[in-house]
Image (cartoon, rainbow, N blue to C red):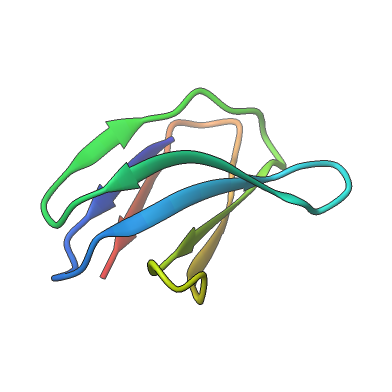
Length: 69
């Protein structure tokens, strides 16, 4: 899954583990993107610096792009 931050703020990408606990993976500055290996069904949450959720994504079997606005 590719995460793309097109927002004006930095964000954090976190995986929700099997107990639904947040596991930090990457901080993205505005305009930054990165590719994350994952499995279909995995849940990913994107937050602002204060921990407030911006978006929630569920990985699919096909390549996908998560655009954070």
